[in-house]
Image (cartoon, rainbow, N blue to C red):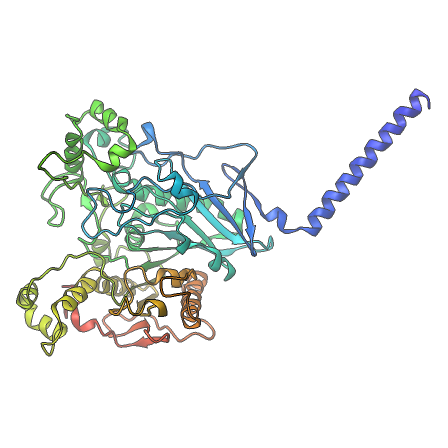
Length: 554
């Protein structure tokens, strides 16, 4: 074979190999159409998800830059871009928080943080934590699906988007895309200091947790279509501090347009229940007589940092993450001072509390679903050593309180106190918010969750505790000390999740085969109840008599 023929032969072989490889690639794509749906492009780069049982999960997606060093106590900055395909198989680390419970300075009654699981337990929390997760169907043809964005609870001092109780798998199987995000908590999430206020005056201040939540919602608006989601059909929902966050998003002008429906699990709504304190000016709020800046200055002093200028701020940012979390150790014979870390009235992102906004009808007109549990004691704000002391707390309504809480004189004090805390923190605030939205013309659906898993009925005789409804909504019931969930437990979970999915689709929880859930009518003595026997339906609110007759709370 001469040189000319040899070159021609090589060229033919190369062309044949190219055609063969192209055909193989096309055939592979035809035989595995789901492969393409595992890789998506977002505004920072490409992501590779994990396919399991018809659901693709994308975990640990950065939605902002790590808030470390000079970015500590700054609004979330854009996430850095990457080249190639980023593997999205593992959750990001939880935000910095106490291990095994709230850190010193946590608001009284705040629940312990959910412990991270798996590899996260070994790594532990970190300041580098601004990551979110997306679950979507493996079917590449799934498009324009409703989107639900979960905001975890934890008293604003703990929590994580990696809890197995809030996996998005079951929601995806019902045709919903589920997103969960981390947000800064504790002193990293809520902090004010005079030098911070003067630094970069055009930036938001104080409520870094809420800034993270808004940044995550902005990411969803920009990117969720790449996962098959509809950016114009987004429902936010959250539990406890996550429910408080939903109310804050409803009241904040900076969150408008980022979501279209809202669900609140045990999130209060009244002032003094994990709500906002003023940024400055001590003594202007009876619920928070000490301003956020004063708390920040006191914390700095406790760490040996004097002054309020930029040099003092630099020293605060120079503290280790653990020093910021734990604060100064107690002195011999002394106690750890409390430096509360809860939302702040900063005047820009949070301009008023949810209660103030709702009373003035300044909330958006969006569908709202909200409620609480039958034994929803979160905190211990109402205390009494005797029945007389309990009734005296109600002042001019003491006779009404006696008729509502102890009509025949046989109710024990502990039960009365527990019910009063439920009413004060959750049940009455939920009804107040429902009334306000209904008066504003919004579709509202109010519920009480009273069902207790079969295996837990001996331990939870009073009813469903704070957070008891969350695994039912997510379809993540697991085996506890009493054994695996029963068919009845699973049926209640399927029913509850169906309502949640219907609401995310249309703003109305009702659907075929479900008991009718009527819209809430302000001041009417009705509520939709998930009952102890596993049934559900609308009927009289047994707690209504325990609320003040004017509807304005205790």
